[in-house]
Image (cartoon, rainbow, N blue to C red; front, top):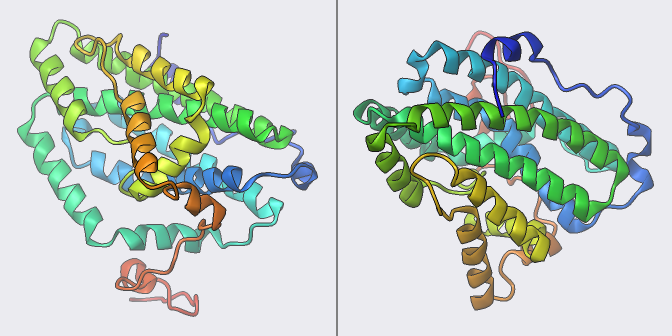
Length: 307
């Protein structure tokens, strides 16, 4: 699993959607669970620019290889979210993509600023921050592509399979960069290994948590992975990440699944009520109107110039 940053920069591009049979999107039905997962995935893909803003105030911004990768990675992830949104629109789910993105971000409110400041301060205090960031990146990219694969399996939708299969190819390259970079940083660096493991055990959360609630994260996990094959896939992620120096036998993805199962055992309505009630829309924020955060929108959707 090698990775060349120079080759990646040369080959980085928007998602190739040529030949996707968009006209057949409505020819096959999707379950409520499929639609819930697609909304979740779209929102998290569209959240990447805010995640990038957190990284660029950390030690990572001093490494030209990391910043070159992040510039290309951010652009590629943009098209993942755009095309999942296009698929949903063609399926008949009506929403304005830009309004939805703005609402997701507005709902974060003060939380986003606090998170950015804490990440910035923590990274400059922690010399081996990049090891932690790279490892988390590897876990999250591997979890993402595994999640897309699980949704292909669950939905059985041929057009969605084609679209997500193309996205998976991008995510595999992203995973290769993170994994190989983390391995390079951790090899023969026992201090970084100790810091990495300690932080993962205490700080890591599944992809999307923070943007999404714990119940929403559990709904995704239980829908996609709460069967024998799904559990094996998550154990496989743990096993692959465990190949990094200092991370042998680490359990993150499987631990998250077992915790979700326990929360549902204690409350049988937990998680799946979100799917059954079709709670996919992002409610308008009550304390932080979009216009106040973006400075370019009014409640009527009119652009504001010169403010």
